[in-house]
Amino acid sequence: MDVKSGLIIDTPAIDRILSGEKTWEMRSERTKKHGLIALIRKGTKTVVGTVEVVDSIGPFTPEEMLLNQRYHLMTPERLADPKVAKWNHAWVLRNARPLSEPIPSGQRDGAVT
Image 1 (cartoon, rainbow, N blue to C red):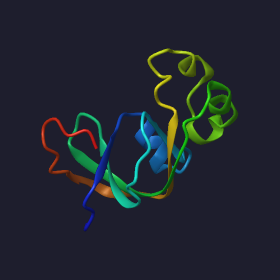
Image 2 (tube, rainbow, N blue to C red):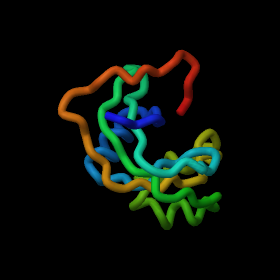
Image 3 (cartoon, rainbow, N blue to C red):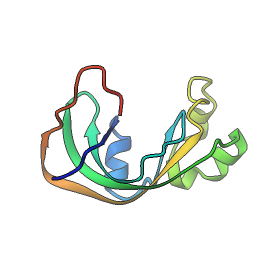
Image 4 (cartoon, helix red, strand yellow):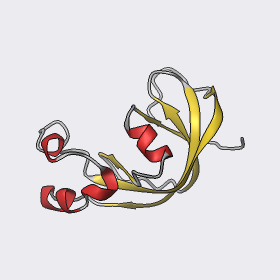
């Protein structure tokens, strides 16, 4: 696999991305990175799939977050949490593909994305 960047995502969000159910990954900042990236399951340092980052949009208001729930899948209760309010930029994803077997990510300690 010739992928140079990866995104660390917790369960169950990573599984929802890999299934194609979730197409926006909400983050606190926009990204300039586009193209194919590895999906790394948080806490495992393993790549479990790949996805294309095709756009970065936002910031969204709380109302816009609710209107776009079908893309990011965060519940209204979770969106009401002040700690979650900073996650108002969508990294737009497509073509998620799970790997048949996880592989080591080569992730360094302290790496975030």
